[in-house]
Every structure is written in structure tokens, then in C-alpha cells.
Length: 417
Ligand SMILES: [Fe+2]
Ligand SMILES: [Fe+2]
Ligand SMILES: [Fe+2]
Image 1: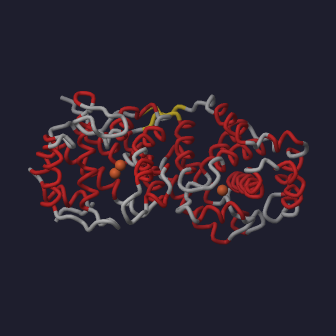
Image 2 (image 1 turned 135 degrees about the vertical axis):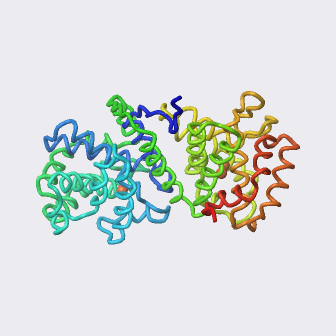
Image 3 (image 1 turned 90 degrees about the vertical axis):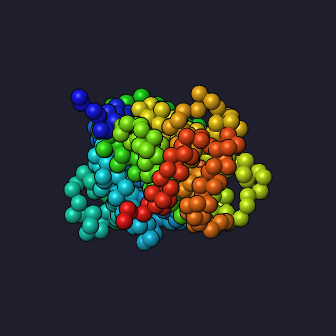
């Protein structure tokens, strides 16, 4: 008998994936939610103006969408949005390149993103493959156009500042930017149309139009796991407190599923749901996530929206629809009193119940600013109470009890002795 050990290959629409990652990146703490999308749009239009073919133009759009994926915290971003050149920019370029290079369908973007703040006249740019240097420089210019426009997006006075921005960028012709690229920009940006096209509604419409460029890839499960790492690391970047939590939940949920007799394929899928379960926290302000005391009532209400956010972030990825649902149900409880969907009984799958228990377990086991790490026996006592009152699934809690020390070790991502 042929027993599957990994889930089947997935048909992933690369465009939807790029947009999902880009939207997640935009939530890390930028003050302008459309920055990535505007840079993608500018980069593609510059590519067209330079006479590049459609494939290259779409590559530039994707690179623009993802160019800031290496931004590691909310504080780095405002600097990136204001200054024309900033030596500290290198760190997010390196991290962004590293994030994408291990996932084959996006690996071609990695060197472009790695160099998207490199000056055109720098020796390192001259030694890059010509296409990489050219594309990276297009992203650099598109990014700086949006940086200079940044202060005016809110009050819609972009037109009044257009000439000033054109002149400032023209002065960097041949130094920061390739001469023919600056020429292309100056030609493209003549007249009002170009500047009006950067208004929020136009940028959103542009993104919708780009969704028509479908790009289906058959991705193996192992490859897809590398892609989920990208999401996990973006979430890690949002807050040090979520770091390790998702990984612990993933490992523990997969382990418990196996202990409960689920097949290897299901265990793998549950582990992915565990890894992604809190991705909706990207939508919650960092100050609330990192709060080291009890939350005020309205803050707690906002915090409770994060599991719906998980579904919203992942919903473009049809290939993992079921995994996304399990993940977004992680605060639902068997008694129907959980949130935000209030699913109960048969409508609440065992897979989601496992993630719920793993989530509670890991959070209690971890050192958090507002509580000390609990011992395994203390965690079990809490879980049993939850099971008795319908807040957690009793069969899952029984599986924890039968293998308590291992569960504790796994939740804390510690290797077996
Ligand atoms: Fe940027
Ligand atoms: Fe959660
Ligand atoms: Fe969680």
C-alpha cells in the first residue's frame, strides 16, 4: 500500500501569493499602507517606459510589492520612507534577499531586493549581472519617488510638489540612478496624469488589474513549507513576543495530531496552520501586542479581531483554504463561546481544536511580560479546567496529559534529550 507522507503538490497562483506577502509586509508597522503597492506600480511603469518586455515589467511589479519584506520593525520604516539615502538601509535589503532566496518561485527577486538601495555608481552595482543591477536600480528609483512624495499623500497636494521632486531626482542622474532610467522617469512624469495616478484609489485599482496576470505554479509541499517560513518571519519581525510562539504552536499541534492517530499528511497540514495561526496579529498595533500589562477593554476587543485577520491575510491563497480556516478558528471553543465566529460542535473541526490547545499550552509555557512561564503540571491543570467547562476539547487535553513532559518540551521548541 502506498501511504502518502507529505501532502500533495499545491497549485499556487504566484501573483496572489506575492500580493498576500506584500499585504502582510505592509501591516508590519508602516505608516503608509500603500507604499509597496505604489512602488510596484511605479517600477512596472518605469520598466514599460524603458522598453522592457511584459515579463520584465511584471517582475518589477512583484519586486516593488515585496521590496521592503526585510523590514524588521515598525521603527525602521519611517526612516526608510523619509531619507533619499540612508546607510542603515542595508540591513533590510540583506534580510529581504535572504527571506526570498530559499523559495524557488520567488528566488529571482532576491538579488533585486538585496540591492534596492545600492547606488548606480557604486562598484558593487557595476559587478552585478546587468539585469539584476538594472532592476534593482528601477526599484530604488521607484522607492525614492514614493519616499519624496510621502509627506503629501495625506493632503493630496502631490501635484504642487511634482516639479520639485522631478528636479531632486534629476540631480541624482548618473550617481544614485542610471542616466537612462532618470531620463525615462522625467519623460513619464511630465504632466498631471502620472501624479494623479498615484492617488490611493488609483493604486488600489492598479493592484486589482494586476491580479488578472495569473501565474500558476505547481509547488511541492516541501517548497510550500519554505514559503510559510516567509510569513512566520514577517510575523516574528512584528514583535519579539510572537517570536517562537508560532513555532512552538506549530510543533506541538503537529505532535498532538500524531498522538491522536491522525495521518502524517494531516499532521503536516495542522503544523502549517499552527505556524500561521496568529498571522492576523500583523493587523494589530505593535503597542497592543507588546503591552506588558492587562489590556484595556477596547484594546482587548481589537486584539480579539486577530484570528479573523488571519483569514483575511490568507484568503487570497485558495490552495490552503482549509488550513487557513483551521488557523483562524484557534480561539473558537467547543461550547461556541469563543471568537470571532462562534462555531461550535461538529462545525468546529478537531484540527482547529488541536491548534487551540497547542496555542493555550505554548502561551502558558512561554515567558511573557505579564506572566512567568508555567510548569507542565500547572498548564495541565488549567487545560483540564478548560476542558471541563467546554473551553477546550477534552480528547485533545487527554492527549496532552498522556504525554505531558514531551508536550512541554516541544511547545518550547527544545530538542529531545
Ligand atoms: Fe521602501
Ligand atoms: Fe491567537
Ligand atoms: Fe497564538
